Image (cartoon, rainbow, N blue to C red):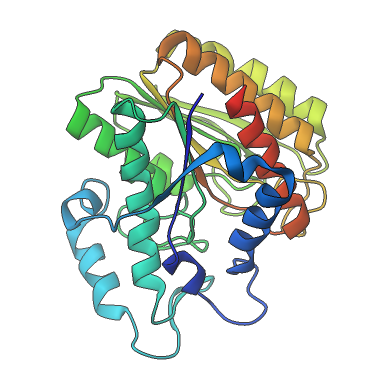
Length: 306
């Protein structure tokens, strides 16, 4: 099992100000824990390229992409929405975060890695076709999935999202795309206050009430995701890997543990092994309790390793 580990130094230079929970320290917390556990030694390290204009506009409106470039500041902060700011390094970081997804697809579908984990920021799953939202500028996982469909001719790509917040941007982008199955679990009602009812043939939602623990999460995944994924027979599985449903995370009210992230990753891996030759790409989304984030990512990667 070869796992590609993809990141870029620019992702640490994106900074939305003191006290903002989506901070550069998130990447350091992950890397420090991987180093201390020895996992860092079994990963193949790659530097993410910048996503191209053509790769961005597969999922985003061209006018939106142009607006992001135009607003990128030379100094200070520019706010794209009440939660999402750009400093002078943010555009570069966002381009490399999106480019990490493209490289992950190339490595996995090109047979150079079995799986890939992208330790990048800003995250992506709230970014819609024409708007930034919830710390997200470009929708990284959507850009990766669209690259797989466009460049490799895949007919069935699954995106699974276990972040505590619903991936509303990903859902918007692929709502009418029959080649993509989008499965999500999330606290409900909660930001971004999405409808808990799936309104498309390829949308599968598993809403969880505040206070839910691991047994409720696992039951929801079994009830809502697994049969749908098996029936879909994905040729590639993309993961929006958010770890902010952890019981120590201050941003929400679910109570998952590292064992729950290991379990769901194993279940996703079974689907990928059965239908996709084990091919998985995983991209960091949320997770703001730094020690818990490091442990949770390690559990996720260990499960990918099998």
